[in-house]
Amino acid sequence: MATDYDVHIKNGTIVDGTRVPRFRGDMWIKDGRIARIGGRADGVAEQVIDADGAIVAPGFIDLHTHYDAQIRWDPYCSISSWHGVTSVVLGNCGFGFAPCKPDFRERSMLTMVRTEAIPLAAMQEGFLPHWDWETIPEYLDSLDRAPKGVNCLQYMPTASLMIYVMGLDAAKSRAATNAEQKEMQRLLHEGMDAGLCGFSIQRLGPNSTQADFDGTPMVTDTMVDDDIFCLAEVLAERDEGFIQLTQATSSDPNDPDDLAFKRKLAEICRRPIIDNVVPVSQRNPRTHQERLEWIQDAQEEGLRIFGQAATIRTGFAFSLDEWNLYDSSPAWREATTGTIEEKIQKMKDPALRDRIKIEQDEANTLFTQTQIAVGGPAHRLVVQGVNRREDMQQYVGKSLGEIAEQEGKHYIDVMLDLSIMTDLKTEFLGEGPEWNIDHMAGAITESPYTVPGVSDGGAHTKFFTGGAWTTDYLAWMVRETGAISLEEAHYRGSTLAAHAGGLQDRGMLREGAPADVIIYDLEELSIEPEWIGEPVYDLPGGEWRRVQHANGYRHILVNGVETFRDGECTGATPGTLLRHGRG
Image 1 (cartoon, one colour):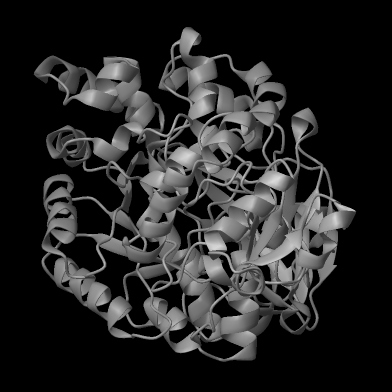
Image 2: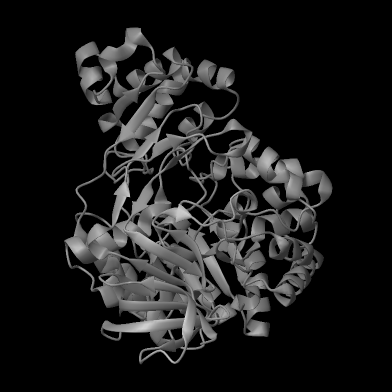
């Protein structure tokens, strides 16, 4: 008998992403697409996958990543692809590498060194040699040619656009002129014609949590409303594309300034907006519920705002030589900007230390004791490593608060003193909160307009491993707690994500759709190591990152071709650039 199909997946439990109850059945793939679901085989297949005892589901769609550089040296965008992600969106938060004039390439890479903590040496060795574009159409053609183990969509990185049109100094210091606005609109039209999925913005204000390499705000952080609205008009005119928005969130979830801007942006563009992120308190359910109610009201008025919620439980481990996630504190930002030598000198300054302590104790920043901090409250940070200093081993395993009490110091002095003693390589481990499954899952399930994710994949990789969110999502929220049904989990992580993000024919298992498929044993799903990623020196330029491996995924297919089998990469690169969300 002639070979009629490329792949036959047999005996699996199919969860198709549409909320239809799971069912046992077979699936056949031909030419990268799902040819048949259910029934008896009417031909043979070149490859047969026995999925007995396993779930067969659509691959996850990761709407918030920063793999823009990494995809050029790692076609699989790991660690996300290890954990069942088959499509990623690039260019989030307004950051990227196009359009870009040739003499700005080095500075463009520097913008990613601090704000997303992507090592410069890795970009210089693994990314820069592939740089053969200036314009967005040229960039997309280059990305199209590059081997890919996942599918990808590309935003217009608004910071790159502004710098290209206005120049860096002007883009950081003033509003665009009318002529500059029109040129940015023209270039966005040109990019959309070439296949962009929309545009993205980080808008965190002058004390941005994610600053530029020199400590100043990123270009979009202080971007005026009208410059954003002029880009939204392009999407409205085309009735095409969507917007990703990382917006400063007030401690009051109903802050009118915060939400009024988002509402007006939605009114102008009349296209979907991905709102990063739905705030979640581990103690107060009203924190996420009030935001979800606001999204519900907006949707009922025809404003297509979708919330995205962070679902992963992960630890943070960091040292002050490269840590950037205290940047919302002006004093901390000053102390951690510059060369290692400059940072050490500043950290020795008593006046600067006093400012840090004041902001630590009083300012409303991401690392205060009154909030769930990035890395946890500073006094509870645990010393995990002291750069192999034998004379400092007595500190390992103790919290800053414990050491401060023993030595009669302020815990900030402890943190800075220990760091200086190791050339800023003392490693601190942040403890997680007591995760509230009802609130974390509720941020997704209590609204029809929210999706999980916010992996930040490819960014901050020396600090945490958000790319493992999919495995934690299924293992914790579905298997261990039952807070989300299996059918709902895949609907939110694939089908609804595809709808919100403009993927035209992906996100569900149906006949004729591209065959992005994951096959996994739900009972065997786990993350290794469990809490914090292990350091691995696998980046270009001799750089390292933290990784968490996935257990339980038997097969991962992208466009009908197997990319991973039992956790091992096959070497196939069947991914595609989804121009206009299609492909």
